[in-house]
Length: 545
Image 1 (cartoon, rainbow, N blue to C red):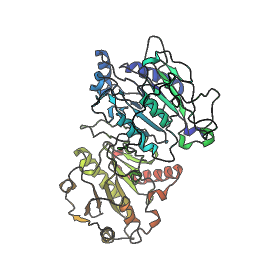
Image 2: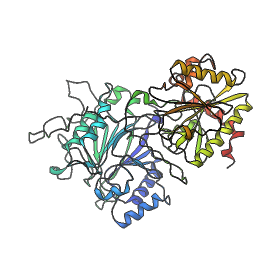
Image 3: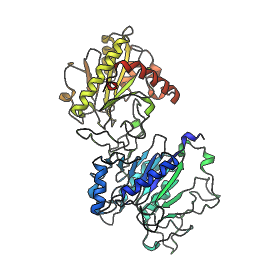
Image 4: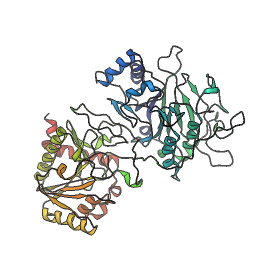
C-alpha cells in the first residue's frame, strides 16, 4: 500500500481538565514525528477545579487553539455535563469537537470510528452522562444489518468492556468492579481493530484477540483493546497512544486477517470464569437504527439515498468554523461540507470568502460545474444568517459575470431535502446551446412528467417568504433571475436538477445525469480545479479582501 493511505492518529485517556498539559505533549510529539491526523479522547475530558475551568475558558474563547483536530467523548459524570451544550455532539471550541452520546463517523480516508460516551445507566430515565441499551442497539443495528459488515476500524468507549482480560494478560486494577457487559457485547459485535477506553486510571494493552473460532470460521482480523491512563498522572502511566492504521475498506483482505504470534482467544465469547455469563443487553437489531451519512465535499448528492427514513443524525466528523458574529448551527451528523472539517477534499476548493466558499462539484456535470457553500453548517438558503446571505449574493453575481464573459448562462439550483448542508449547484450552460426559455421549459416539462408542479416566483422574491425554515424544497434560479420553486411533498428524485440539465433538450449528456457515473481520479480533479481557479481569478472578490 502506498504510504499516502497511512495516517497517524493519537488516542488519549482521561484529560480531566489538564488541557494545556495534553496539548503541550501533543505539540512535542508532532515536532518529533510530524503532524497527526486527529486526536481521539476517551474518558472524562473536563475537570471540576477552578483551574480546569479557567484552562478550558482560554480554548472556548479562542485565546488558545488546539494544535490538532480533537474529538472527545461526552460527559462521564454529572459534574461535567455543564461543559456540553447538548448530548448530540457539536463543536465546543476551534478544533475541539464533542462526538455526542453515540454514533459512527467515517473519515475522508474511509476510517470508520464507532463511539459510545459516558457510563452505563443504572436506571431509567438515564441521566445525560449515561448511555442505555437503546443507545447500544441504535449504534450497532444499522452496521450489523449490512451483510458485508466485517467490523469497525476503531471503537471509543469511556467504560471498559467487562471481562476483556479473559485469556489475556491481566490489567493492574481490581477487575472485580471493572467494566460493563453491555460494552463487552458491543465490542464483540462490532469487532473493532482498535478499542480504546479510559476511566480506570491505568494503562493496559491487552494481547490481540481473535474474532473467529479457529477451524470453524474463516479467519477475521484481530482486535486490540487499549486502556489509557489519566493525563499527567504522577505515576507516569501511559496516557497517549499513537497508531497507524489503513482503513479496513482499503486493505487487501489477506493482509487484514493476518494473525500476530501473540493472538489469544476472544475474551467475550466464552462464559465468565465463575461459570455465569452476564446477561447481554437486549437484542442489537432492535428498532431506531442510527443513520450514517458519508459525504464528499462537492458530491452532487450526499448519499442519503442508501438509508431511508431515519430521524436522528448523531454521527459524524465534526468540523470547525471561522469566527462569525452569530455562530452557525452545529451539525448533528457527519458533514463533509463544513470547510474546516479535516475530511473536506481541499483540492476541490476554488475560492474562500469570509462566510462562504466555492468548490468544484465532485462528479461534475461539466468541467465548470461548481458549488457555492456556506463555511458554517447551514442546511438551506432560508436558514442563512444575514451576513452569509450577503456574501452568497456576492459569489452569485461574481459567477454570473464569469459565465457571461464566457458566453454562458448561469443556472443555479438547490435541493433542501435529505441534505444537511446547503449546496447551491451552479452549472454554466452555453448561450448558443440553449435560450433561458428552453431551460425553463425543460424544467417545467420534466417536473410535470414526474407529477411535480414547479411554481414561477418573481425574481426579487425572497425564498423565506415561501419556504419557512425546515420546509423541504427544490428551486432553480435562471440567468434572468427568475426562480422556479417546488415544495417537496415526498419521494423527490434526488438527481432531478442534474437530470434536467443533462437531458437531450439541454446539454444532451444524459449519461452524466448521475454524479456517481462521472468519477474522475484525484489528479484529474486537481487539474480541473486548478484550471477553474485560474479562470475565475479575475472575478474572485475574495482575493481582494
